[in-house]
Image (cartoon, rainbow over all chains, first blue to last red; front, side):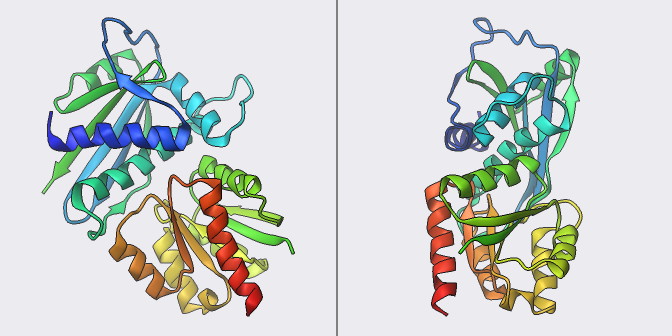
Length: 152
Length: 129
């Protein structure tokens, strides 16, 4: 695993603990296969001393838990879509900000674009999971995939 | 005294979480206003008297930096204190923002206690003036 991806995993785990009080562990896919049918992929592009993108994918059901933990309140049943996805995007946004500091130090200035979010079906999830440069972990018993891309 | 607060962030969740953190920190609030981008926030500032603005930087449409520049052009940064709340950890960026006229920076993720300390410091200083 590249240093950047290893850092991404470490930073994501720390941010998830601090922001949404959720704890991560290694994902053994044989022990806990992803049985969900709907997934969310969030991506943030950044520019600065180097350019790239950080992506985060997880079962859609994780978004509700992320939002509830961020707000400290239970959400009504039946709430879905953009309303839940934006909390997932915020988790990625904070992770990306901290990852760039971890990789480049406190001085360089990066500009982060707003998160882009798409819903994936199982085929899309499997395709994303099989991409090179993916790392995976379990967040509160749900699989999460991270991808870091650096250009120039 | 209770304060009128404007929260500018494209994430509805982030706006609600910040309002909740201020509530947990027992910040006296008269009214919360919210805006999802700089353009909407500037329009709101033309109409409403606001005691403090919490501003995210990364937003679609007019982002936080552009909004600060517009506020500077209009002389609003002299009268409306702005605290930037972002995931940005660049000291260079924070220094540039301070030179532009922001009154503080809170890095996400924050605790209600850290937010309260920032608000108390800022509003306390305003009261002493």
